[in-house]
Length: 335
Image 1 (cartoon, rainbow, N blue to C red):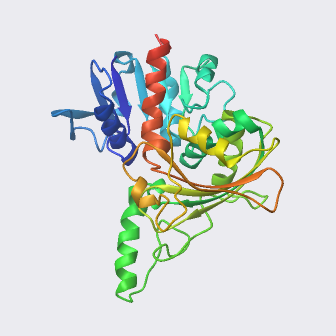
Image 2: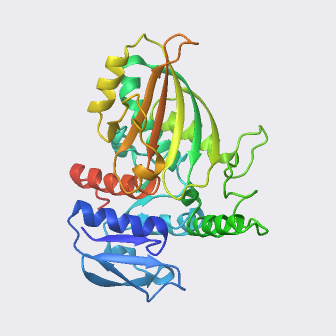
């Protein structure tokens, strides 16, 4: 299987390379592709230096699978061209709600790959991906009616520049120097900003609407979901406080059993000091961690959860590679 990674020099592109190395996916030729200014750079993969190709002139007929990790504008322009020759797995938001493009989390809806019509598969938003992995086994058992989620999202969700700025702002704040935010609407150091992406007319941000619309497309259109998305001064990993209302009664024993046996989930819920997972502990790990599992005593058939996952992995690179594994396994290889 020949593979291309578009955006290979960025955060997610490099994470895709890391995941491919760890999973030892069988690769014939690997093509690293990026903008003209990055062309010619060398990146190590499996002990070998690979030169970065110019996206504007790259020939996608050489590949069977092409990962896109370079943003929506690049995907809009180049993904359809690549899809004429290669199955595209796109990490941007551009194709997610296109009815002819399946939106896939392999542990949740792998069968939706069969509906692929444009030879393009979309990767969901990072905050959505970890949420639906935890919701899926519970929905199967108890039928979810409504979800209320508040996110605590790391700055890496915005890319490398916000990560660099968090470090810079933290230093300036400790030195009592003036802070002028470039990548955030307010100071991010030692702060929390309830605003990710642009506002809609209804007052929700695009990030919040993505969680609503993508969860419905991936899991079930009937689920009602409302979200508040918050950026916090953490480098990597997103956390979510989730309230779930079910149609059917449940027991905590069945909830725990379902989550513990679900692929991609790991329950860490000791109800003691430190008996839960925080963002820094999830960084670099493949699992989606679930803690603070408890009944919501204020509402019938309702549950509270705390979900944490590495957003660069589960929400991007890992999910993309697992989509490729699903393609290969089911011989939906775009050829």
